[in-house]
Length: 192
Image 1 (cartoon, rainbow, N blue to C red):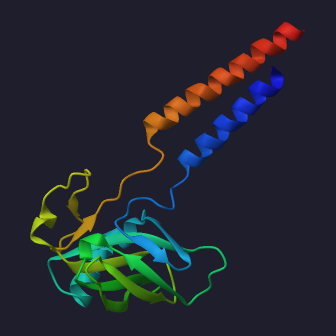
Image 2: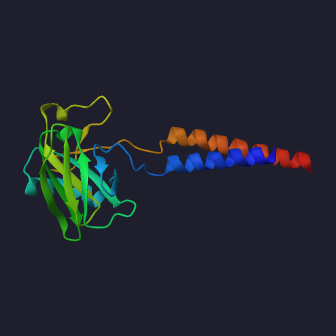
Image 3: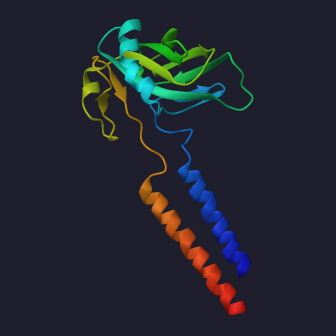
C-alpha cells in the first residue's frame, strides 16, 4: 500500500511540476517548424514598453506585433537559422526585431508564403518581436479569447498569448497531492 501511495504522490508531483512551468509550445502565434529554438511568452516589461516605438522606427505605423522570448534548444548554437510560421502574417512581409544591449535592432525582413512560413537567422535571442501589416479584422477580439492590446502610445498593437499553469488546474493538482499525503500519514499511523 505504501508503494502505491508513494507512486501516486510522485505522479501528482510530476504532473504539477509540468503544469507549473511555462510551456515551450505556448500559443504565442509563432510556430517553430524547423530549427534549434523554442518560443515562449515574453514577460519583459522593458521590452513591451519599447516595442511599439521600435516597430514604428523600423517598419512604420499600424502594424501587428508579436513579442516573444526565443531560446536555443537541444544542441543548437548561434547563429541559428529557423523556419517559422505565423498564420496571421500569411502572404505578408515580416520584420524580425531583437532587443539587445543597445535596444531594439532589426534582424531581417522576410516574405511569408501563403501559409505564413518564413526563415530567419538569429545571431542573438530573446526577446524577439515579429512585426507585420494588420489585417482589417485584427482589431477585433478573436474566437480564442486573444485581443490586440495597445502597448504604448504608438499605433501598433501587441498580441497577448494564452497563459500556462492556470490556477484552476494547479488547485486540483494541489488538492490531489494533499489528499495523497494525508492517505500516507493515515497508513503510517495504522502500521504503528
